[in-house]
Image 1 (cartoon, helix red, strand yellow):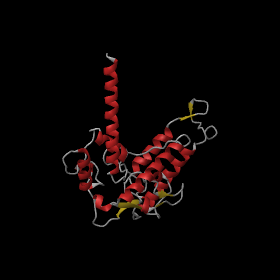
Image 2 (cartoon, helix red, strand yellow; image 1 turned 90 degrees about the vertical axis):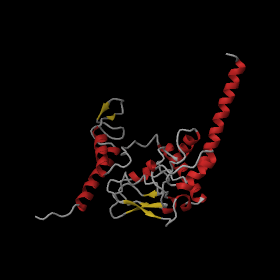
Image 3 (cartoon, one colour; image 1 turned 90 degrees about the horizontal axis):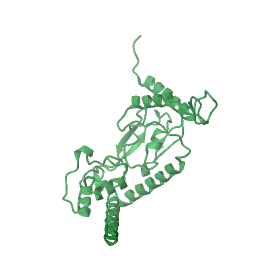
Image 4 (cartoon, rainbow, N blue to C red; image 1 turned 45 degrees about the vertical axis):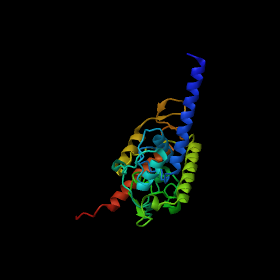
Length: 262
């Protein structure tokens, strides 16, 4: 092949890639940055790139609502579409609230929150910092005792009318910091079972039991019951934590169960 033609094709491809990246950045700036994943992508930036690449529609962001679709249509030159019902409905901006009386301190919601808006510690009460919460709902399905709910924080305002540019930028920075912290601690933090979106408490317990039943890699690289952080036969910190969650869930269910006549 002609070297000149090869160089030209390479330059053209690089220019096209750069153009997609620039468009993706503009699209990302037009999103409310809830990081809710309802668009079908893992975060807002990935959705923006999917739209810029033609792999996703401009109408898949429920938090942005109709105004958000119009913004993306203007950026991409596409016609305005109705919000995709498959991905959700436009609504007010919400914040998560934890019923602290029922919180068992499992920390699962801390890991799920994309903006680190939930504070707490293992076996200690958790609470939500409303100013950091985007109402993404990702903390709700992972809670084994269903003690988290969303409350309306914008009244009758919905979509982009419920968000300000400063709130979106704040959420973007919080998510970037969350990603950095998660990456920095990945090498020293054991993975934990996460239920699929929409899974209930039973799924959490089942995932916990399944993980606990799996053999753990030993310190010598062989499969066995010995963990990397404890003596032979002793549960690993992860297994101990899973057992605490399962026991707390059982106690919570027992408390909530209606009393039966003798």
